[in-house]
Length: 309
Image 1: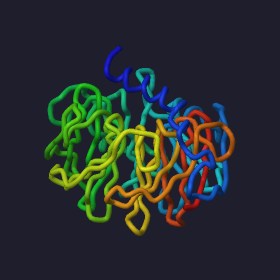
Image 2 (image 1 turned 90 degrees about the vertical axis):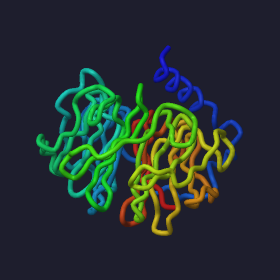
Image 3 (image 1 turned 120 degrees about the vertical axis):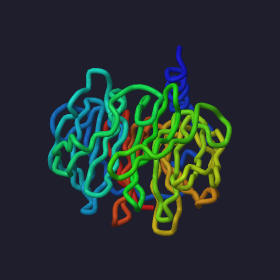
Image 4 (image 1 turned 180 degrees about the vertical axis):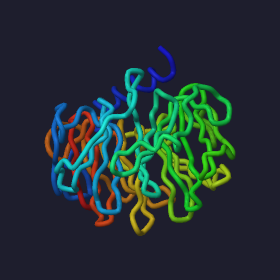
């Protein structure tokens, strides 16, 4: 079993057991607003959805295990959809909306695809496509984001576990990170987030922690420890932030959403393991819209749960 498979097996086991020691009320915050979609292959249904983001109008963009990208209203009504160019080798695991583009982490093709929000593939904006450890080459890409200057940051795992930075025109600038548990190292950097101060937040998933860097890759601070108790983390997979700077995390292994101050002080949680409304099964992602709605991608329940915090 290689490192990637080991990490996945641990996450799957944790997903079934992590809430055994949690308060079974399902959390201390969050109000469920709606539950939408269900398992299926037709338009409007989901099959193990893996990543999501929202645009300025509140439309929700989701990629699932069939390599479909689907767009929904905040209430879950299907708007449009399309398929990524290739998917026999594997499916995308990350999407981010930046500068009127949908950036898709085409994980097993070692690249970042760029789409107009109507689904038009901008082929001249694709970054990567070659497996390797050189500048502009990638392992398994998990996410891509842009800072205020338009520079792009791309996370990858596999043999590399690093972040690469590119200029707005796609030219390689720098990289940082390696595989490991020391500060500045990663074990599956799953998702990225750029805050209003242009700090780069990294969900260091298999190290069960958050690491925060400046735009030159210098580590500013980090927090998090493995566990199922409130304030501990079990495979943090995605991140959002509210207007107060509070950090909202989804835990793939913990089957819950947690909210922290930016310094890592816990403020509360929502969710627990299960299939009923308000329960989660190995969630991969979340997205917060301009109205404060938080959409949670309940992956193995093949649905979205929308809450307010």
